[in-house]
Image (cartoon, rainbow, N blue to C red; front, side, top):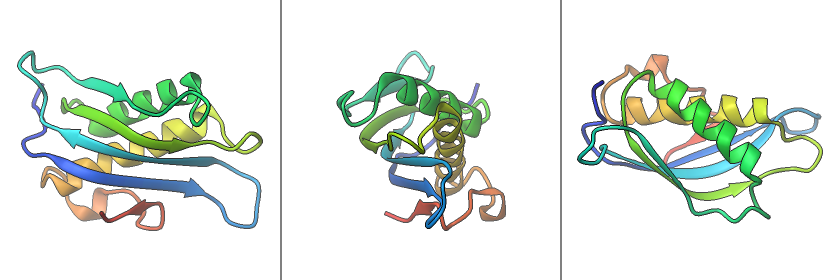
Length: 123
């Protein structure tokens, strides 16, 4: 498994549909090359009241999917959910976008294969 070669800070995902019901996932994450062991790690600094554990777990699953086998250390620095519109599926989708955005910013994936720009902000 290859590791992320460079740090990618400030991946900001805002996944929601304005004016309609639908998925809602909001978070910021920093991606770093993997540690000595070479495996992926996830550290969540967001309190449960702002992002319940089931959404953080789904987010991590999505990030791993988006990284596509590339290992990285991921630090979740901000997160929010909506009581009605958030779901594990939505956070999984948003996490996948974040993983792909990290690969694009690290130069491992062409920009055309990255996530939609309307959901992922530049730092």
